[in-house]
Length: 372
Image 1 (cartoon, rainbow, N blue to C red):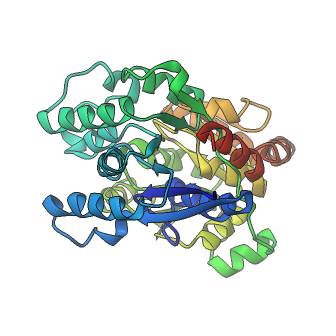
Image 2: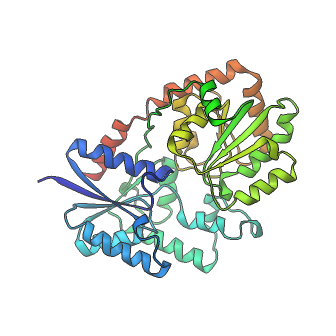
C-alpha cells in the first residue's frame, strides 16, 4: 500500500521564506521515495474572516487527510491547531515541524517600540499579556500532543523541551541547502539588479528581531572608509516605513535600498552581487538564507544566536558577533571590505561546508524520523 502524507503549511511556493522552501522540497522529493504528498496551504482560507478561517482550514484538513497516514503541520498555531484537530478526528499520526516560537514572534511585533525587547530565551520564563499567553498555551498544547516533532537545530530542541515535550519525541534535522540556479557573474548580477559599489546584502522579513535597524546604524562609520557602501535590504514587513525613516534620520538613505518582496531567483542574484551577507538577527532556528549565502560563496557576518553557531564556525567560514553589537558588527564588516584574502577564505570555506547540507540527506533523515 502506498504511503501518503498531508503537508499542512501556512505558506507554499511561490511564497518565499523557510517554511515555503521546506514544504516545496518535501512535495518535490518525497514522491521519489514512494511517498504520496498532498499540500494544504493556509492561503486557501486566508481571505476569510479571522474567526472563520481556522475552522474552515480544519474542515479542509479533515477532507484532505482521508487517504493520508500522516498529517505533517509546519507550524504549531496557525495551521498546527486545526491540523491537530483534523488528525485526531481522522485518527491519523500527527507530526509537527517547529522552526521558532510563534508566541514570541507575535509578541515582538506588538507595539515593539513601547516595551522592553525580550530574547527568545527570556520569553520562555516571562509572563506576558493575555493574548500572548493564549498563543503560548496553544503552541505548547499542539507540541505536547504531536507524535513526532522535527526541529532544524539542537538549540531549538532545548527551547521545545521547555514546553513540556519529551526529549525523545524531538528530532533534529538540519535544513537543506537548495542549490542556486544563478549563472550570472557578480558583475552581470549587479548590472541586472542595478547595484554597484561595495554591496552589503541582508534578507528577511522586516520585523524587530531581524535587526535591520542595527545594520543601518553601522553605515555612517563604515562610510568613512568605504564611501561607496550600499546596504540592500531584501524583503518586506511591518517595519518598512520605520526603517526607511531611520535611514533618513541618519542621513544615509542614499546608501540603503529596500527591494521589497523579491522572487527566489532575484534573491540569489542579490547574494551573487554582494560583497558580504549580513544578518543582525536576534533569533534563527537554522537559517535558509545563511545556507544559500554559503552555497553562492558570499562572506557572512551574522549573530551568535540560535542555530547560527551550528552551521558557522567563527573566523573560518563566517564571522559571528553578538546580536545588535553594532561596534563588533562594524569591525567585522570593515575587515571583510578591506581584507580580500580574508573575505575570499570565508567564502570558499563556507561554499565547501554548504555541500554537507544536501537535500538527499535531509529527505532521508526526515523519512527515518517519520517512521514511514
